[in-house]
Image (tube, rainbow, N blue to C red; front, side, top):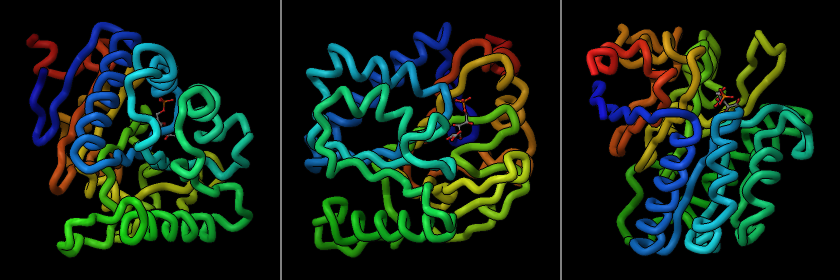
Length: 265
Ligand code: 6PG
């Protein structure tokens, strides 16, 4: 394990071992929070990397042992497409995981990214998160006032693109200056399209944030994000520094191959 600023980096042999460790982490945290406070709230990432983890979680031993009925599912970001579209992060997760495990439908809060107005979609998702975390099942029942009006997920899974983006926080885009807003619509020029994304403030309010990254095409960016100078407009993944939570990178050897400490091994 490597220690990088406030991040722990765990390097695994290959994407298969990475997926298994990520599934075990999910299951362990789910148990911990369900036993501790009766529920587990998780925001999932899209893209291709989490697919193998979802597939493992939908089978034994996780199918039987994970407390699915007490888990609440959200997403870190979504493409502005209908929920049955091949590019939909929700659809990928539903196909590979949610359609195969006993999660109550009322526990699934997808981003309504198909709405014609992306700003409306972001507003609606923000309202869903606010009512869930401040008044709904997610509200802290400890009687103490919540530290902030920003939702506090138990776990946020993130990926990282070769360009250093995470969730849909892309380089040089307006969402990087979203301040304390919860979720925003973000126009991404390279796709000539909007995305809906949690902001860095919401992600950084989580109890646990875990990046999954695999593949050689991420190696140089991973080194720059973890060991390079702080340039969040160029590498938005650098914005992710939980205020009061853990930050963990689960990566495979090919993604880690340019990390100095890793090379020193
Ligand atoms: C998305 C994601 C995005 C993803 C990265 C990495 O909607 O695409 O949420 O942030 O995590 O692009 O994607 P891969 O896992 O496919 O490399």
